[in-house]
Length: 229
Image (cartoon, rainbow, N blue to C red; front, side, top):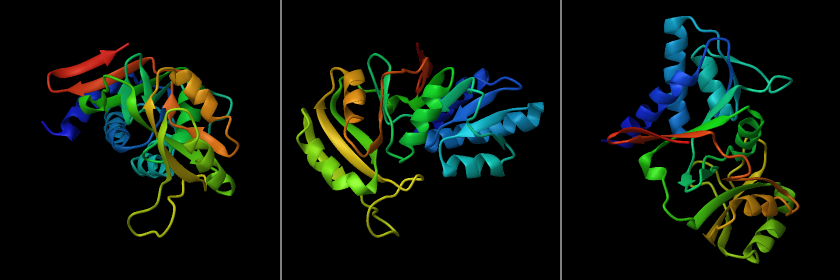
């Protein structure tokens, strides 16, 4: 069974959480693109009134094109945010950010009343070793942040992400910042790491999601959907 089929299993199960009148958060990435497409189909079929808060231009453009209605993140908190992940570790903490939308993903996920993660079974990790953590960094500080990271305890490498096609130079986020990828040998206290990374001046966001963990993780597997609670 291919990865898309596994992700669709998780998407279809998580879609049951959406109710008429909800304001929901929509994350970014390939799995969430599938979720948005299936959500739009359900909204049209059942005549639902559903609004969304988005974590990226990519999600906003797709969801709006499919007829979903966007709202800004103002007074009302989303009831649920739906997001993907790059890696899921024991204890329900996750790493996100390979797609570069981690800053707004953390805002939407953490300010929602709850958030759920949708992944295929290949994203499950048995041990927190060789953990790749993306960071969004202001361009003014990127050289200093890289130098500090390379002296950080447990860091095996820290590199500026560079575009490989079409664009010359660093990858730039929706917010105009650069992306840095750090690899940690082991992460035993993810909450501490999440906090410590934010003490580096110029770090706008990091991809460790542990201080607020997802309420549920939907895992598309060959034998069905597993829900980690």
